[in-house]
Length: 452
Image (cartoon, rainbow, N blue to C red):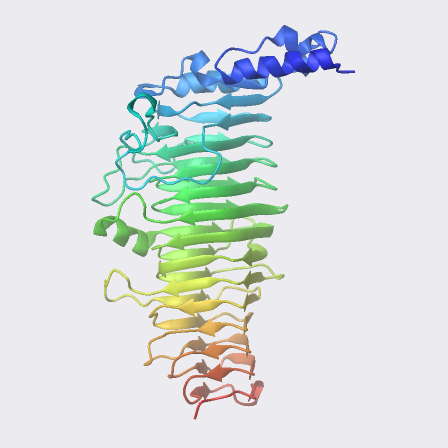
């Protein structure tokens, strides 16, 4: 039994570790008959292993020493105090170990200038630099297939820090870098992390039951990639926005080539409260190495996207997208681009359902559907589209549009001859109905209300 005396000794040891003093392992183990291997040092300060937060010397080896020390003790938390840590190599977070900076919630740095500035209301004697824990990553420049900056394995976690590439130029086309974070193994977790200007953000492959939560930043090529997941993964409260650079060359690159969220094979993926701004494809579903995705996507959003949702492939159970808000338009005025909110490509086989979603912004079309699958829109709002185009154009497969509102006048639906079945009922429009039906009797159309 752990007695009261032991409890206070353990708490005191933990307090010393938090202050940067190594934990007394013998004291921690005394209450368990000296079994120190069962009572690991809970806290490890990376500074005690030589990690300098001045941003000058490479801190990779020192941080890794602290992580390895925690693993040898059976697990623990490696603390990275506030500061700038230059990382020229790669870090590996072992199982049962957490690498933690100072942040305990989602953060963002406005712009690429990360100089320390005291808060104007603070007294001179108490002013501090509000920068938190920053990793200044230089390794792998120009090599997107190089080893990831940080690998988080099963039952390990990463949190509380910002990943920043100081050699990225905010005024030109971005440089390639490897993945900032790679998650592998069961129950890996990333939380409260800012990917300020990563080329590629987080890759979760064979990371079953992964948890990605409270992530922000401006990943430039790819935000999050999920693939080869066979047990339920979760992505929650992720916000990608151009905080680092608003330069036109950076934004144009993202609009033409950037992808926020990419889903390959994932069985029962849960995605909640996510948002992206300015990417070519906000949510993309692909054929991964071992298959495609099925999942539940609630409260997801995209603004200033070229395509809000692109479905190349999905599983037979399908994609359930609820309470989404999507905006696709040519916000950079590039010309020769066709912003279409939803693209369902011909190879796709699984159903795709949008429920209670809102589509707005001056896009060219709401949806272009070329797959033999079933696509459904229920209780959705379609705000704007190019009036020279049909809002929804279906070339094949089965289509359900029920209880939706078309808020502007203009052509609403076009069914091509390849459509196998369609049900268009109970909808309302701001103008008269303009439906082109080449599917004939395979389409059931009725009980739709028009203004005139």
